[in-house]
Length: 133
Image: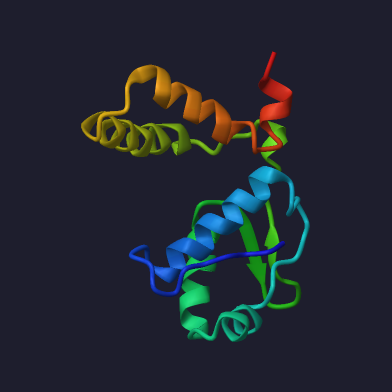
């Protein structure tokens, strides 16, 4: 799994790490049971504080995407193709999607363009293979 983050970007580094890991899992680059780099290793790779990586891993753990234990470290917990959504996830996801769709509308993207772009993004993800007719 190759993570790319923008150390000078507006999005906090821990959020970028969290987002890139979720995307890697969705694309099938990291599958259930795969070990993630240790917080110290990932921090050293990016030249950042290990607490920043720890914050990203804590988010992923709370979201049920990874599990963390002392012996095996951080391990991918979710297989996107399983179709198992955690209770409460859909409502939170819809709320975030609503804001993104509102932003697209405010910035002048029409409905067809938004749908086309959503389909393009979804086509990058492995789980989409099972649901596309």
